[in-house]
Amino acid sequence: MSDAKAIIAARAAKELRAGEVVNLGIGLPAMIPDYVDSAVGVVLQSENGVLGVGPRPSPDELDVELVDASKLPITIRPGASFFDSAASFAMIRGGHVDAVVLGALQVAGNGDIANWMIPGGKTLGVGGAMDLVVGARRVIVTMTARSPSGEPKIVERCTLPLTARGVVGTIITEHAVFRIDNGTLALTELLDGATLEIVRAETGCGFADALDMPAG
Image (tube, rainbow, N blue to C red; front, side, top):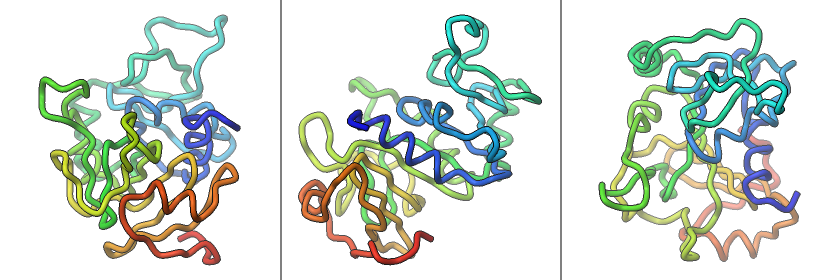
């Protein structure tokens, strides 16, 4: 693969476990259903009120009434259900979502996350992210390693408004998979031919080299 977002989405799909209910955020995470093996038995949730999201439709499958939280067309898996936003967030806040995959503007090495900007900026407000990152049992961040201006997104300390503190467990970029355990950032996998030197150059904080260790 050469497309950074496709690399990230495909790798993130491998993080999802059989039997889990997984919420997918807007943007890059919404690409993940295209890479999820239906045989794995993962149930994908979109916060606008869909449980059982499938991959993007072909032109023949397109139903204009089926969209995800990104307002993009979806298909649904057998047994899918629909509900209102209140029920969706009751599910999230009640701890009934096993994992959430979302994007971020910055993630600190200790697991702090910033994924919104002050109103008036080019990025949308915080939305449901605050509920998602504290309500889900696992928080997986999918993002490119650098911002459009070239700044590292994995940082020593977030400088943008925080969404939550110490909640991120996994970070997936186009070049690497990181795990955060007890506030310690560790590199566990290189992607798309990247080297340790490339990852160090595009990461704004120190990290442990755990490439020879099994993923947790």
